[in-house]
Length: 429
Ligand code: UGA
Image 1 (tube, protein in one colour):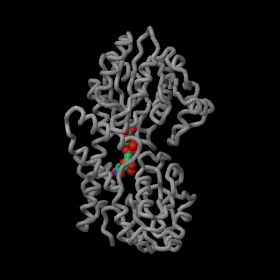
Image 2 (cartoon, protein in one colour; image 1 turned 180 degrees about the horizontal axis):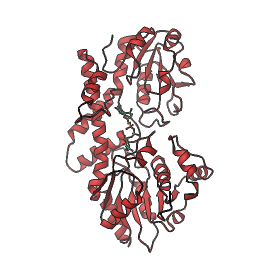
Image 3 (spheres, protein in one colour; image 1 turned 45 degrees about the vertical axis):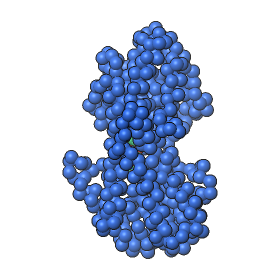
Image 4 (cartoon, helix red, strand yellow; image 1 turned 120 degrees about the vertical axis):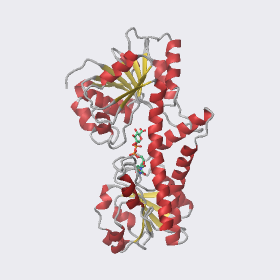
């Protein structure tokens, strides 16, 4: 693509920052990625990619001449037209978003004499833009623009989600800043939603809340299916054909995890509560998700009796397939509960690590995980699990019990392979 002459500084070379930077470079802009972690910057300079994200390594390699990496603020800002903030906003103990990394970026911005636009990519509470605006003004940086430009990229498909998004959302205080951010995305074919800053911030939180609500909704339908003999996979198919409902995000399972949904649901809950509003639906969505992770324990107890001394294999640790991310992964909650019940827990995952899961033995193959196990739980729907020879694995187990927490496998085939098979929201036999 042609050089557009725009210069973009991206603060935070984490998963969002790296994808944002690489994609802007792909669009022809010159990008400087800045991070405080020296080792990460060193690796990026050497051409290594510190995270597992399909397509990102190619994108970084292809656009090398348009990308630079630094730990220095001044070097990043030098000549920049846009400063993207893509730092972490983890939850505090209260569930509020911790904005300290955002404030550090705002406070570190050097005096600049040309117009730059600070663009918020990190997910922040509604009202953050307003506060940043005041802080910039108080520092005599009234000529620095501000825009909210939230990300809607999912891990594993982040590059595609950025380059082929369903929409681009831009909220700016000044029309010209919004126009500039829109122009920065030239080359991407997607509707652009222009909004005020607060609404842009809310669009991000509401989008994630809507997706979480769908998951908790289908999970509750699954639980009622179990109680009544219906099959949630059929039900999801049947309702998904209704265009008003749609097919996506109707996979029942053991609940959502990841670095975004759990954090963003708490942040929105806190935001509403501290504004004086009790967000009932969102509270239910969160509670259903918590309970869903634990339902597997009840299933195992029904099938095995006491779990004390039983060997349970967890198939998958990542919060979803095609990522090594285990943040808020249901596997970790399950492992903790199983250990508390006195079970021996072994885990397999093709990329994610059981680091921090004390007491869990991680093994290198599905075969090793199942050897001598009393039960297995399919936690993450890794495609590899569709390829294994379940019939021979059943023979390796002490008792061939499998709880499919993602409804990934065919119940009839699993039973024919010798398993006592249970899933989520599907008839138990
Ligand atoms: C999510 C959103 O999908 C992105 O649009 C958003 O930008 C991102 O959060 C963010 O805020 O940064 P991500 O967390 O990477 O992306 O992953 P998803 O693919 O959305 O999955 C989230 C969780 O929901 C996973 O644990 C997954 O297993 C679960 N899920 C998803 C279900 O249980 N059922 C479904 O039907 C879909």
